[in-house]
Length: 359
Ligand SMILES: *[C@@H]1O[C@H](CO)[C@@H](O)[C@H](O)[C@H]1NC(C)=O
Ligand SMILES: *[C@@H]1O[C@H](CO)[C@@H](O)[C@H](O)[C@H]1NC(C)=O
Image (cartoon, rainbow, N blue to C red):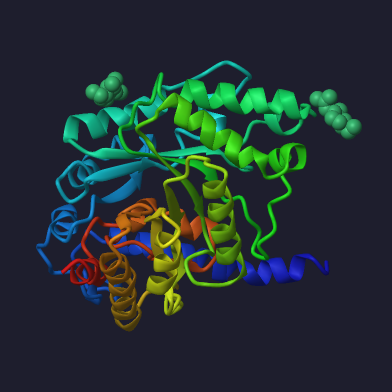
């Protein structure tokens, strides 16, 4: 009984929060609702065109196979709004090598095919990560030599022979804890931090033209974790390990954009790596209001303007462009509305904020 009471008390709150964004998207009746009074974006700016106009390589979006049957979504994804796409899930280890040495490329191929047919570049995502990792990797008690071969075999099959994606790979994803120590996963526990150079060297061998990145969150502003990543970059560079870029995931909370975002990007680029904003979204506590959407517009502008101001910040990717397919509501209870298009695929003020940041 002690457990049941708080759970029951939470339920109405949870279901209300999760209903709000989809209500906003499903109101096709034309009746006036609170959400239909929310402001929309009005800019006609084309994001990828604007980004390239200020010397960036791309403005892009995450996407993946479950969305490809949504023709209204695809019309925007495939348009010139986006010059780059990142598969949200279909190139991860559990998708590409679910059993040892049994590879499945169809999901990633579908993403690459869309990029190919619409003239976009792909950021491959990702090769070595403690999550979405099959248990045959995490639970097999491989020796250091065996795990090295497992990593090398995975990368040499996924990169190059199958996915010649022409741009960048997140080779290592989220290696650090928030206190700057390495995550205690099978890779670190078996190989120490050497797993990072093993993975980067394997990716370079498989596709010498690809930009090789390490991607993480919580490194966007200065602090312990960001310093740990900078130290790692310096160590890799000192040991001639191929490292080209650092991904700032940028899953931000409304009103909490690091004030030193730009100078922290510059701290990384000073080490001889590019920076990319790889998974941008800015979540708010629901319900969304006109004021919160206005703050979100300003926050998007702040992030994009920081990248715009740093020549080594080469591109930016939103983690998906629409609230319809955002990971936020299912991951952060009570939060949502994090993307620049609403769940009805209508531009939000945040879209105008991006345009302002690129102008
Ligand atoms: C995409 O284009 C590249 C380069 O032309 C090609 O090697 C690759 O096979 C294409 N992939 C798909 C899935 O169409
Ligand atoms: C790995 O080691 C643990 C602890 O000794 C053991 O419980 C587990 O069964 C082992 N896994 C395999 C696949 O051998």
